[in-house]
Image (cartoon, rainbow, N blue to C red; front, top):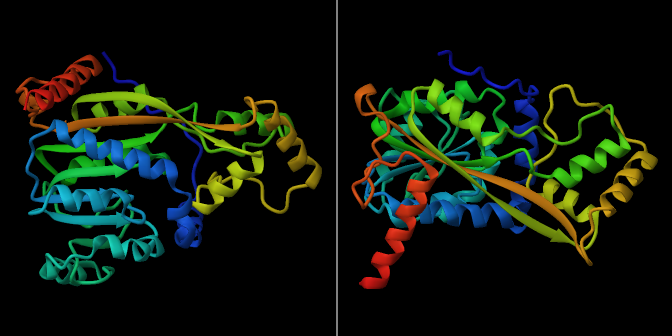
Length: 328
């Protein structure tokens, strides 16, 4: 039986991604309502494991929304916030400060020369997810909150994650699925059908297949839909710009867009209005997998002691956890 091939994705301009996130760094936190919510969801899901990681990478850490929660949860761990944008990491500094590991920053600084403040609870490193500055099998936990949608080579990035994870290390992540910004995509198709204006997002089943190809065991995938609402369609675009989430296709059209075309898009978006509000849908894909030896692929060391192999098992585990809380 042959493994499925990776889906063909539009090539993204990583310099463009880096530039736009850097420009958006000062305004990011004010507009990142969804990113904050999903970071909270990821933190809650970590309740379902009993891992005690010594080294944690938060990849695509941005302004530290999830990193801050990891610091609180894993007080004895070495936590490293990684982002493609140095400006984002500068904005993260207030969340990373508690002066726990003054030596760690110095060590990493000597290794690659791009860290920030030394006396922090988490070290910040300006690096690309495709090329992590860490040795093989040196990390216990990788988290990544809404970053993978900016990687057009999913197999490559998962292989890099697998390389640095120790055997039985855990990868937990979120990304966006195909229904993300579907209203905006449809509105642009009306106004400019020959040109893509919204990034392409991967189906969660394809993400799971990529994990298997990269050598991860027993990937568990599920998704949930979020809807942000606005008074006007232009509000959607303003929020996307404020967090740096612009169209990153390497072959996107250059130059100014005609005013008539833009107004046509706004008018088409109005057809999606529900009652008094304009919706913006986000399909958030949750996933986790284990970097286990071949004979132990996917042992999820959770609080029930069971091996987790499906969304149904994951749901049962959640229910069991909350029942235990009620009985305390």
